[in-house]
Structure formats: C-alpha cells, structure tokens
Image 1: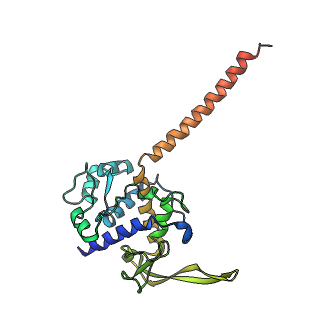
Image 2: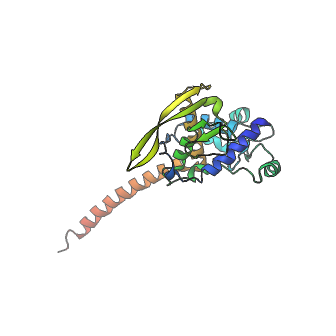
Image 3: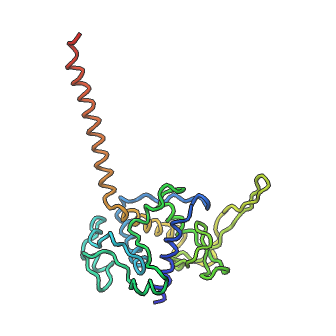
Length: 252
C-alpha cells in the first residue's frame, strides 16, 4: 500500500509537471531517440509496468500490442501482467479508481500519450520526461523531502530514488546586467543508488523511449511508408518529365 501511495503521488506530480513551461526552467536534455531499438523498448516496458502502472493507466494500449516490440504473449503473461490481467486487456492501473478519487480528489492521469503532450515547448515531450526524471534532488524543506529542477517545488516524491540514489545540485552564481542568476554546474552524489549514474540515465532513457513508442506504436511504420512514398514520387516525377520531353520534342 505504501508503494502504491508513493507511486500515485508521483503520477499526479508528473502530470502536473507536464503543464510546466519548460522555457522558464532549465534547458531540456535530449532524450535518446531509439524507438527502433527492441531491447530498449522491452526494458522500458518492464520499468513502466513496475513503476508506473501501479497508479497510472494506459487505456489506449493493450498488452498484446507489445508483440510489436518483440515480446510473445507468453513472455508478456509471465513477466508483465498482474495476476488478474489478461494479455488482450488494456493496461489498467492497479489502484481502485474510487479509492484514488476518494484519497486525492481525482484519478491519476492516463499516460498513453503523455510523451506527445509536451512537444514544441522547449523540446519534445520525450525530452521533458527524460530531463524531469533525472533532475530530482533532496530538499528537506519540502513536505515530500524532494524537489525537481524542471518542475520547482514539485509536490511529489522521487519514486525512482532507490535506483538513482540521492543527489545534490551544484550551482554557480552568474551576474549579468546587475542581475544574479543561479546556473547549474553539476551534481554531487550524496547517497549511492542501486545503479550508477550512467545506468540510471540509460534506464530512464529506455522508459521514455517506451512511452514515446506507446504514444504512437505505428510511428516507425508511418515513417518507413513515408520514405517509400517520397521515393516513388521522385521516380514518377522523373519519368513524367522525360515522357513530357519525348512527347513535345517534335513540336515546333
């Protein structure tokens, strides 16, 4: 129950964070674009189910759609399903919606297309999520004990902290035209996590990669078809041009 509670608070905070204008915060890091990497997508799906699906739902995604990223129905059933779920069902949150509404006044938001909701605001939705999940730091002045550089004064804890550990941001003070600003210089690891910094970044990258794919599972097919359509149009245009030249060559 404690894990569900913490994950739910994180879910609500993540949704609120998606409404924050990134232009007024730190620069967004570029998320790895690996929607063709099946290993990355599979690991991201595992992280999503273990850390997000307790409270979030993905109502427009069915478990059996994970066959598109190389998983069989049996693998999904053995590794990614809750006890009562079936492979053909949509990804439903483990928490009872009535309980969530009674506790927090609203149900946790659906995450099916969350990676597309931030596009165009200082970076893509994937960039926002990737930076957001990697810029938590301890702040004992906050009720949850956590804060976030992308979403200052965030009202949620850092559920992935056991993986990342505890960090402290290091700022430099810059002065420009009489105004002093704090610029992020780097991070200091206060307590180690289960993963190294590189491993954690890769794990978050996989999670964001999966969420980006989940927002539009057919995106890679769409891009491939688009390339072939452009090639066809290019060839057809060349042929039409030569036919036109041949047709009019004897006309004075």
